[in-house]
Length: 344
Image 1 (cartoon, rainbow, N blue to C red):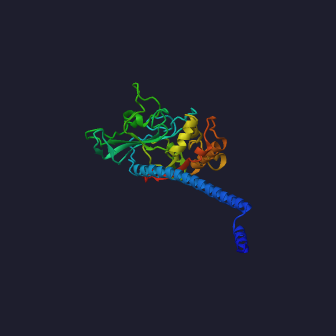
Image 2: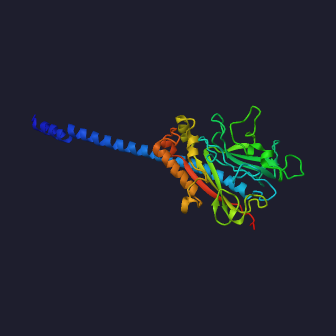
Image 3: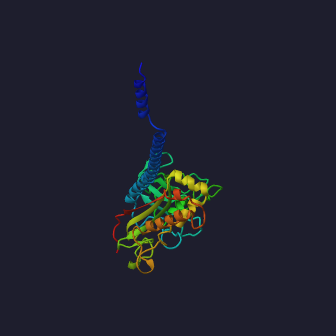
């Protein structure tokens, strides 16, 4: 039998097989492809995670603003009732509304506001009321409080005077004299001092750690004083909120995962970060001396403060803040038309 056909078959099989170099090149190419796919998947997860955080903060902001819109739209805009709103001077029937930030400056820290509104509230019995005392604050008690540095809303059920249950009060009776928790916000709760405690407060914005508001007057000016000084007005007496066209609100919101990272860095980090965000009074304006405030200016200042914290990795008080966690913070603003009657 001839061996030639066998030799030819062996040679053909040899030519059809991969060489060692070809196998190594193939393995290298496959490895590169796998690494590229893994990197794409990692990037996609990071983008998705960031997007989900943005959706979470955006959803919270929308819910908070929708609740405020209903409360402000039904506000009792009368001259014979009290408002706890910020203005010049200490609280004397009408307050400045400022909280205290960790940096210890009375002009730093989230605002408070309290007013009467024709929105449903609840009595202790659970029955619904036709009118409420509404108050907003960022709880600034202690880090052990589950509500600490979270936006709270009070909806205390009231009735008109002359009826049973707790009535709405008229001047000279003030909100603070009847419901001290509506105008106080400190760690003094319990131990016989309950000025900051009220069971009708509930957390409405668990990610909202900074809350500031200002006024847009009927003359178009944005200010932290709820009356028109050009018209000779120096208080709410006799005019109520008649000079105010709208209330502007700014909030800073963080998702729960990023908040946990900041809290782990230092218990004071988020409070210090909030204190770095200026009040409307100290925010930059336009014109000579930056005195003229404008809608959106406060939010722009907050964004600048936030970028500084992200860049430095710490607050101005040198408390650490993980930059990646700070990047998840979002700032939102909205104005609410009060539809008040004109004053003369």
